[in-house]
Amino acid sequence: MALLEDLKWRYATKKMNGQKVPQEKLDYILEAARFAPSSSGLQPYKIFVISDKEKLEQIRAFSFDQSQITDCSHLLVWAAWDGYSEARIDDVFVRTTRERGLPTNTMDDYKKMLLSMYEPLGKTWQESHSAKQAYISFGMAIAAAAEQKVDATPMEGFDNAKLDELLGLPQQGLKSAVILPIGYRDESNDWLVNLKKVRVSKEAFATEIA
Ligand SMILES: Cc1cc2nc3c(=O)[nH]c(=O)nc-3n(C[C@H](O)[C@H](O)[C@H](O)COP(=O)(O)O)c2cc1C
Image 1: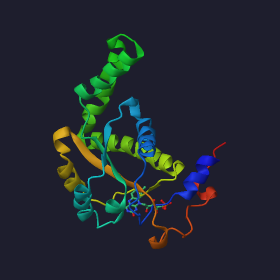
Image 2: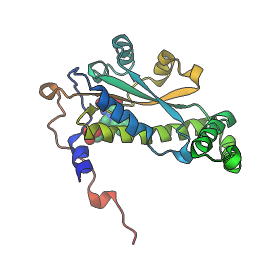
Image 3: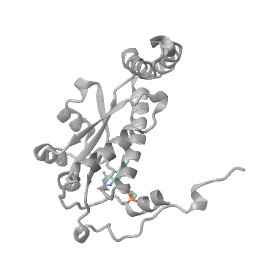
């Protein structure tokens, strides 16, 4: 029940008050994001945590001037792999087998199968698949923030190419997927804070096939 109450408490905050999120709460949110499941456990994304004022001003300028970007405590950016490669997949399975104390070649067949499945699907499919994994982590972070009574605004309203350039993502084989300013609501200046949360009805949402 507690999680549901937290999810009902949260909302896509439109006005934040500039207050800092304590380090332990930030760490908690990042850990929830890190522990998200991903397809084949690849975790094909990284998170950038930005609190540099100048950078935030620059980002706001190509994000529809959304004030949460400069009034937040930290801006989290999910940057997903720009494609799958043998080296990238190898790296994951070498680490996995090492941490589990298994022979390094344990996952060789699985790795070959993954590569033979992903390669023909091309870069665009691969990028989109990586971004989908990033969104799972993003969802976990949103829920964790709510649990910590930290406000957050999920955001796609920014220029991906400009953010990629600002953060030097192409050089790292990454592309921005989605961003999340976290901080605290400015109750008296947020037009959304007291409006009813609207969702499709349970009946329309879930179809039971028993
Ligand atoms: C992927 C995604 C992108 C979004 N982009 C923005 C955005 O750029 N700016 C914004 O103010 N809200 C954005 N939202 C917030 C949604 O409008 C909001 O989550 C939705 O209306 C439901 O309202 P609630 O989050 O307050 O419950 C986004 C939400 C998601 C999940």
